[in-house]
Each structure stands twice: as C-alpha cells, then as structure tokens.
Length: 237
Image 1 (cartoon, one colour):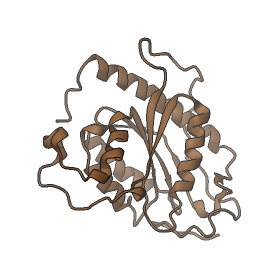
Image 2 (cartoon, helix red, strand yellow):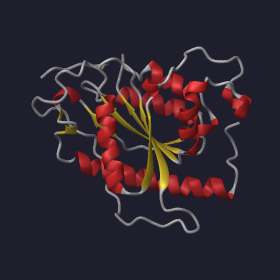
Image 3 (tube, rainbow, N blue to C red):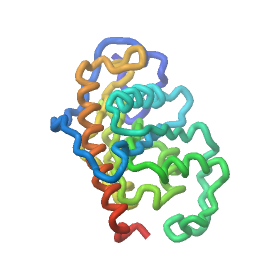
Image 4 (cartoon, rainbow, N blue to C red):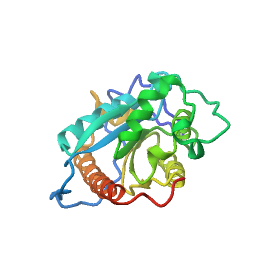
C-alpha cells in the first residue's frame, strides 16, 4: 500500500487497491430535523474543492460528497472549484474587511464570490500539502471576508497517514479569525489512494458519517441563518 504523509500523491492508483485507512467517527445525532418557521427549510451549501494541483483527487471526493448532500435533502448545493478560474496570489492594498462591496476582485472571481456570499454553510474538501492546506485555498479565502461571517464550515480531508487533519487544524484557525463557526466533527480519509474505488470510499461507514456531518452542519446553518436575519452579527468588520 502506497503511503504519502504531508502531500497529495498522483491519482493513478486512487480508483482501486485494497481497503486502507478509516474515517474519523462523528457523534450520532437524532434524525429528527427541526423546522425553521417563516424561512425555507433548505439552507444553501457551498462545497469548496481545495486543490488545483494537476492530477488532483479533490473532484472525486467533492463529487461523492455532493451525492451525499443530495441524498440528505436539506441543502441547495453549489460547488466552488478555484481550478476553474484565474485565482491571483497578489492582493489589493486595502483588505476586503474594510473595502466591503468596493473591493476590486478580478472579474473572473465574480461567480465564486456570488456563491460564497449566498451560502448559508460551507464544506471545504482539502488535501494536505507539507503538513498544511493548499495555497490555492488560502488565496480563495483571502480574496473574501464578509462571505464567511457567522456561517458554519465543515471539513472533509484526505491525505497520507494523517488523512489531512493537519490541513484542517490550520484551516480552523483561519476561519475562526474570519468569524466563521467551524464544525468540530468532520470526515478524514487517511491513505485515500488505497481507500477509494470507482469514485467512492471503500469504508462502508462513510455514508453514515457523511450524513451525521451534514445533520450537524444543517443545524448550525439554520440556527445562524435565523440569527443573522434577526439581528446583525456584532463583529466581522
């Protein structure tokens, strides 16, 4: 079994091979979904593909996760893929925190910015590069600010022995600084290159874990959406 710690290997063997790795368990929750009266039942979820590396495995994970979101039925789904746009590393002098709607983003980012702004919740799909997350993901985050404020973020990671958990720990710090609410329990796929086949994880429990993650995320999305509608968030600017 091939192992790669702190990096994302090429995907040549990602669709086959023996069972490898396991998922980080999440706590079970009630299947009862509370209703937010006076608002649409569904929150809008943006699934963000974190990697733009050639031969990346991220779209495979994101596609599987999107299927779980549709089966869950509690979200309207957007997929955000920074590989589809020109994502500059050089930022304007004035940070988006202060520039607000006047922040001079490239025209190519317009659709991504719109999806982030209208989202009630996020799932970030990230590999682990050198004990952290990809530069492309940091650039995507840094081009925005208010789009994350008072919204929940969950993580699905993949990598070598750690399953991308180092990347998630760093992302939790970054998103907390942006006034987002990070969800404690997430999915991690160690040694993913031997743990997936035909676009799906070989671990039979993966679907159940994903459902639990989405239930937690849906709860936070509804709660924070209701709170934002009732009163402006006292921070983030």
